[in-house]
Image (cartoon, rainbow, N blue to C red; front, side, top):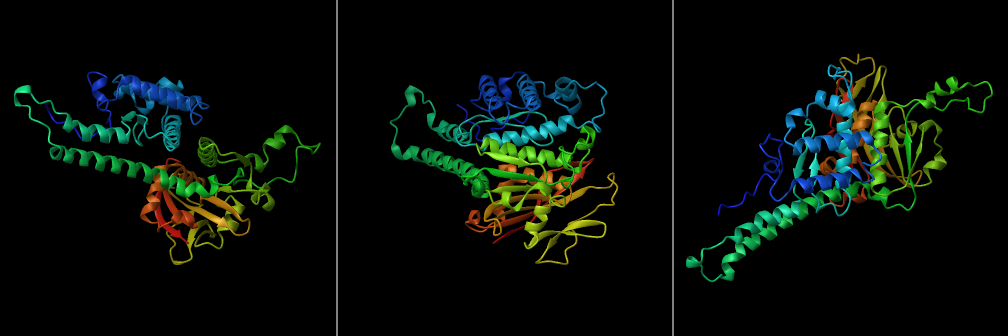
Length: 412
């Protein structure tokens, strides 16, 4: 009998003659479909029709062997009823929803007791679903299979215990590695969010934006049109996506939260009521106040703003010129802070970009366990008990932000 394969438990989306050949060992079509239905019924997905439709489409097409159909334009036509000749550069619906699906899948699998479930992924840059066996199950299958060789009766010999110990040792080692990997990934997320999630109080989400208008709906001279045009009614779409990602994270952890529409309408007393999350940088006055004395903060310039570093004041590379035409704008910067704020005496998380693209990238960083795991390379021991700041950059392509890249980190 040939030795079992010990590698590549992940389906890479290669076109196949039949559905089963594309699945990892010991994972069947019906297992993937059952897992998909379990994900779609979870609180992370069930309230979003667009996310559910896209995930179901890519999983079914992959299982059916039609990976060639999983291109941006084809998905736009099949899932979102776009015309066959629609402009994918102007209409980003497929990319936007796919990004949200990736974030929600990450949120789903970071929940406790998901380690034993089949993994469904949609990797960045691809719309082909990928399926992976549970890590512990993969390790057991790979490690124990060599010990199950069938010996013909005429050559059978008594099993001696010391001949089987190498296979047992390999099994134990692989299981240990799998458990370590799962624990590291989960713990990175829990270490970052534990001060917020451990609080008995609900979390306050405070989003940056226009200042509160002096006029109120009670003003008898105000029309509905006047009310809708107030600065307090506007929010950048990237800030809205950041808010959606973080609120979805809290919801998936069963943590109650409330949202305040604008930072300008948030009082100091409200920030004292429990842990809070500030979303937005230059458009959030509470962000500017609370980061002012920290190592990394925002500094306004004559034509833009930058991330200032008190330990390296000569660094002017992390800057955005607000006069740059959008056709030439290609990079934004953000500061992620998790602190115990001395003024409010509350745990605070701040995801703040110079522009809204940086804010969105910062929100993606704190919502994705894989991104948070990168902190381990910078962090000292017991960093979960410390304050921290992380500076990230994001490439901006045609007005959309890319994945966050860590530039610097500080713990104290």
